[in-house]
Length: 124
Image 1: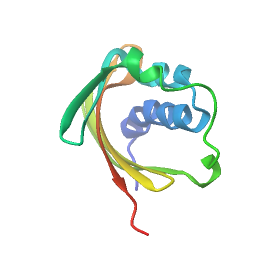
Image 2: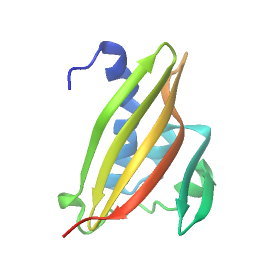
Image 3: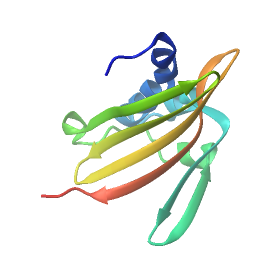
């Protein structure tokens, strides 16, 4: 994927997000997201919406035992002015997550405004 300079800058918070998962460290997540961000999904037919503080409580600085085999990729990113959206795929063991990010650029740079995701059990 050939990226523009602005796309590269917009990817920076996604890279922080990837590090947060890899290191199981909420500090990276706090650098990636706006403090007002929500992480949303539908699980078993139930809508969930976590504010960033609730989401960050999931991280305990104990990387997963299978971290070396996990994969995280940016599938695409689109930037228009100060707004962007991106799709990423995370393969965490037998679960494949698809994340959609809405990002915004402020004077401090790019941050993730919100995340919506879906998880599927990977095909064997």
